[in-house]
Image (cartoon, rainbow, N blue to C red):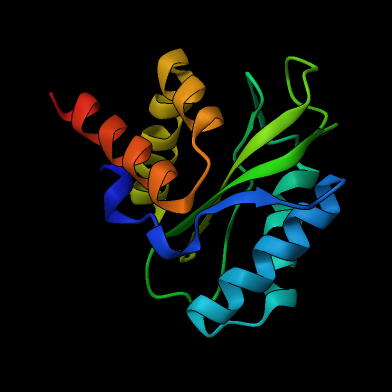
Length: 154
């Protein structure tokens, strides 16, 4: 599975003004709710439930908050670069400035894991992270993410 299969290119945010993890969840859940026709509160609850199991701060300034959401028809992901890095309680202790917000149907099992793997491939590639941090527009961020897909497919 590759990013372009589940990434909402229209929902990429190049400068998200959140100052803490809760704010990130609320803003991205509101956006996802509007895009998917879902209740934003249910989206926040799904992601928060998963977060209580352990931080989704992946490391290298990246977080991958994710959750399974009843009534969702497909895997969905939005991406945001935060205006300012925040303390996210990431596994490496570093602040987070890049967020991949992943939602899956409850029965997505293996596909949910494949989507997480696709995100982690991009998030582990230092040149991709550098390009994401340097991109200033939604289109530029999308181009970097699609480029990561093409690199991983090769």
